[in-house]
Amino acid sequence: MRKSLSDCIIYLAIIALGLVVSTLVIVPANAGSPYDDPAEPSLPRTDMIVTKGDTAVVITDPQIDFLSPEGVTWGVVGESVTEHNTVENIGSLMKSAKENDIPLFISPHHYYPTDHGWKFEGPLEKLMHAIGMFDRKGPYSLEGFGGSGSDFMPEYLEHIHADGTVITSPHKIYGPEQNDLVLQLRKRGINKVILAGMSANLCTQAHLYELLEQGFEVTVVRDATAAAKVPEGDGYLAALINFRYVANSLWTTKQTVRHIKHAE
Image 1 (tube, rainbow, N blue to C red):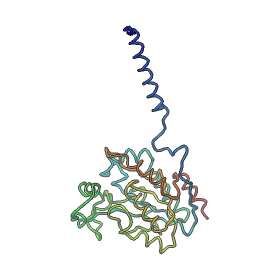
Image 2 (image 1 turned 45 degrees about the vertical axis):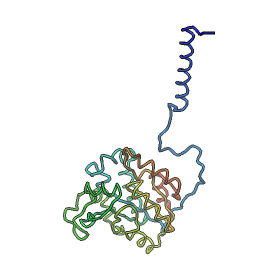
Image 3 (image 1 turned 180 degrees about the horizontal axis):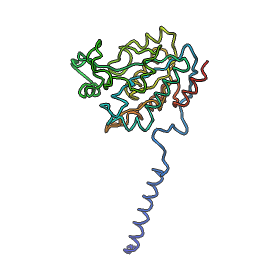
Image 4 (image 1 turned 90 degrees about the vertical axis):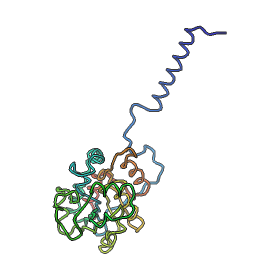
């Protein structure tokens, strides 16, 4: 039997309504943040106990080029840094470590003129060199260093320059394999690390992997880091997923400060 025009219109309207309802079901209006932890995680829960004498706070790249609106990467990292309150949270970790006798280690990123003679580079290395990120005049020169993009954030200087803070030799790409961080930790009897800093999916993540391979327990402070948002992807989200997979613990700054305060 042939359908009338009105029947066809009603039929098409029902189909359209069904598509709309299906779309609403697939993408609920109350969807949470992409950074929220899964409601029903499948991986087993692990944790780390902070104890004085064998636990340290390690901060990667707490420098102007990453964390300041004056830095060369602010256009791509600024949104993430602001969203996670990263600058203030890193400062809280440093302050808590110094006040509670937890050793503070800084793993900085510096480039000297000789580093610009590399014959091949990955995408981020090429970009960093092109924009002069973390550049210094030389390993034994502080000419132009103060307040430059390679310098530490001003609000951190009282903690970084305080007695007992260990500033390691610079790492050059992402991980600590080429600097003396592991040596400095080992020589002080450290086997547990609270890790934070920049950038989440680059140096912070690379430090996490190497420290785990070296036999350390590592907690990552999830809101004391941040990363670039570019067409290739959200670096913070990429790192957060990996942190959940491999870190011994994943804490907020408030949780971390509480653990440090009650360490024995």
